[in-house]
Image (cartoon, rainbow, N blue to C red; front, side):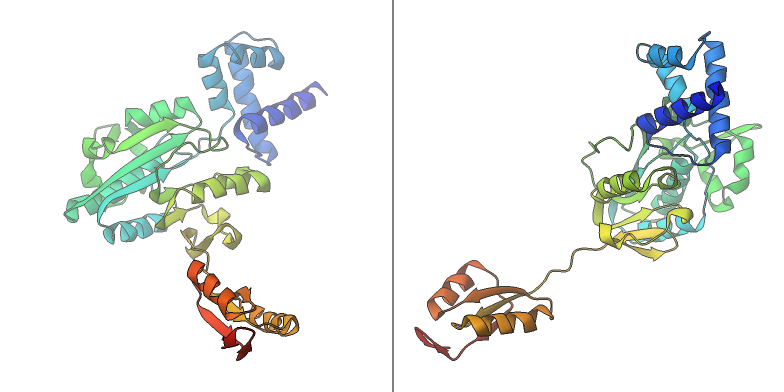
Length: 322
């Protein structure tokens, strides 16, 4: 009973702090184990005492956040997306801005950097900047060290290894890439205070842990940060129809913005209310925004203030012929 209460309380705390709803019991068992290890190390006798302590101890809070978040990441995960990114970058002129959300320990952000560095070396005038975000300060600190176990080389394509500094048991990404990459702590459920717009946003394997309501909230504010020609890269398990949010699937799980279709304006100049209603019923089927005038003078006034795309004009009007 105590274990069940602990699990339910832990779920609620995770939901409030991170928005995550991990769903699978094994996720909670692993997180529960990490939290209990933290409590034992800090000599805290109950979960309640842990929650009280994190309010006044920033280091403990950072450790707790690290315990309750998932850190699974890898180099060039879902590799086809990096081919799509390279193609997008090669068509771009100037500085290419990228946002990498939920970057964890940095492998994804550096994979983006390796991809764009290859373009920079081969395309004069091209440059890039990457902002990588995560809620977990410990993961960000590890990412910032730019120091990785040599086993990670297995999934890095050979074409990118010229931009690595490889040692006997570890490797790092070259300084040219690191200087173009910034790591920053951020909770994506908070209001997005980042004002920049981006040519590409990577937000992969995050939405699957959120409720539908939170998914929508995060997507809406993320889409607002996309430039008109930008791409949004989601995880393959997150690829679905988001047309109601203003994006469409280009291929796989790569999305682009869809600008709202501008409806044409039709001015109906007709002094008979009955005929106005009849014409309105006809033209609404053609997806027009309808405006009405019952005289030539009223029509002239409307045209002076509105951009009219089409006109339906009665012949006999109170103040003249149409």
